[in-house]
Amino acid sequence: MLSKIFGSKDIAESKSMFEKVYQENKCEIDVIIVIDSTGKGVYSYVPNNSKAKVDESLISMFISAINNFSQEIFDKNSNPSINVMHGELGIQVESKENYCIAIIGRNPNEELRKTILEALDYVNTFFGDFDASYENEAFDKNLHLFMKQKFSKFIGS
Image (cartoon, rainbow, N blue to C red; front, side):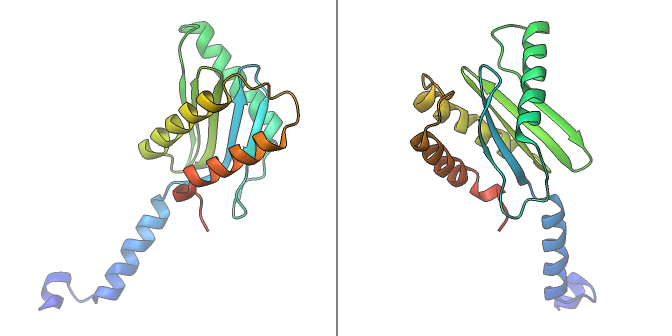
């Protein structure tokens, strides 16, 4: 009976094909960077399994330049949403108030964008007036724990 429904393939083989397609299209994070309003990267996280080799300060400057350009061209008070794709790899950037969060990863999607916006609300609420120019272990630890938990579904094991 099942062979009539699924053809000659058995259920285990069909499941394996589904898992392969899912893994190929799964949204995965390689780098998370939080940038303050001065353009300085105040936090970065690269998961252990990340394939990306990045210079966080270079990325921070690049994202800041794009943010400043879009605010200059469109609206100084805008919170630009930037999505740059190169094959399956992409950079998703969301800005709000004093911070922006940039994610580099594979197959960025709307769920990731919503998660970034939620994280931005948290960062601006709890660290909005914080001067990140000084080394602060509590800031780093709290932000690290929050980001790792918030984006856990997008960080491969």
